[in-house]
Amino acid sequence: MDTENVVWYNDKKYFPVYAIGAVVFCLLGAYFYWGGSAKERDVAALRMEQDMLRAYEAQPPTGQRKDFLVQAFPKEGRTEYVSLLESVGLSVKDVIEEAGKRNEWGDFHKIFISGTGSFSQILAGFDIIKSEERWNAVNLKEMKRSEEGLAFEMEIETFQDRGMYEKEKYRPDRSDGDREKSRR
Image (cartoon, rainbow, N blue to C red; front, side):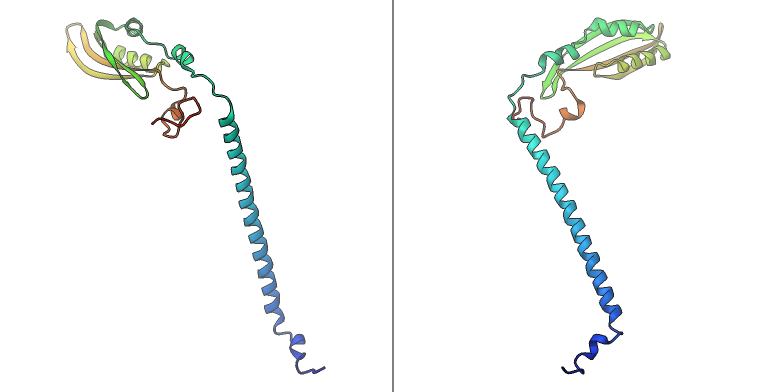
């Protein structure tokens, strides 16, 4: 055997380079193994979610929750708002209800109320109407001085036949409750 060709095996100047190279390759292997296993976990979670969605879609359709919604969000009458405003001391003079507009989210009814009271009573009336769980929007249209105190005109917009949850109702990918694609 030729010893001239074997000398480089015993040469100590290349040992640190080989050792660093081996460590780098081991670290790269561990990094790629960790990254691959993380991706496999993500894929398994997505497959499980997809299987759950397929199982949900395969279930027999349930009926609409219309009866529940009608009970949960009943039509608010004019007397209800008048009694709420009179409970804080406002005197209501006129109540006009406008026919509601219908769109894809439900019926919208507008009620115009005019009356008199003090500024603090008007603010308390707004707080009471907005604090009730009735899905109302209250807008003050006019407030001016009169002989009886401050005269006000407010508009109350009520929403009927709304969805069960606010976030789900306005999602564009939401189905209409019969496990079919959305018509929107």
